[in-house]
Amino acid sequence: MKKLILAIALFSASLMVLESCSPKTTTGAPAVRRGNVTGNWMLNNITFEGIPDVAVRSFLGESSYKCFVGSIWRLTNSGNGSYSLPASASCSAKTQNIFWSVSTADETFQFKKLYEGEKARNIIEGYRLVLAGADESTMMIKSPIEYSGKTAYVVMNFVKAVN
Image 1 (cartoon, rainbow, N blue to C red):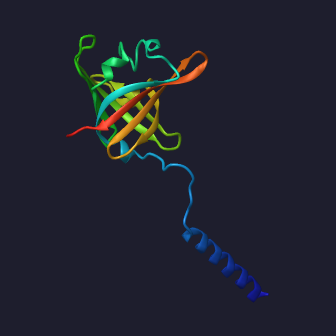
Image 2: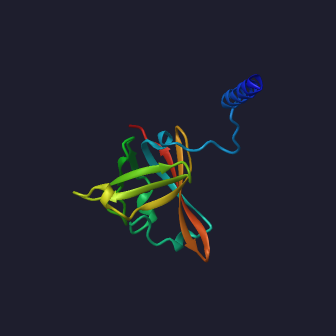
Image 3: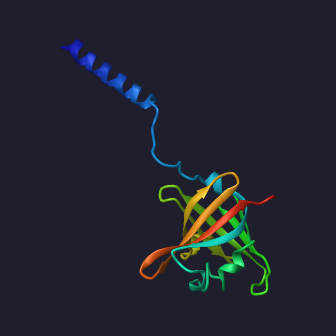
């Protein structure tokens, strides 16, 4: 009886070892990691999915989505960061400090605006955007917007900025 129990225990242990060593297979694209997002990015253009551009009045707390085109986003590994909006005919130059994070579980990019003397943990409002993709040279972030009873997107296309 002891030999039978010992044989079953060895067999079970062998199965567990083999299972832990077997390659894991996944379907779909690999998840975007925080490391893919860290760095300096230039928002080179904005496109729209399911919504006309004239329907987007303000964007991410600014008067126009156009203010963001050409902006530089500095995203450090610590979660601190900023974005700098360039001056244009309809927008003032501005640098906004932010605290950002990436959730690989639901593939989102979140950030909170930080103002002088504020701490990120005390801010309860922020932005939760869809992180559609990021690699060494490009990043795409989509801002969901309700339009005509459906979810539409303002799509921000970034390229890696030269430091």
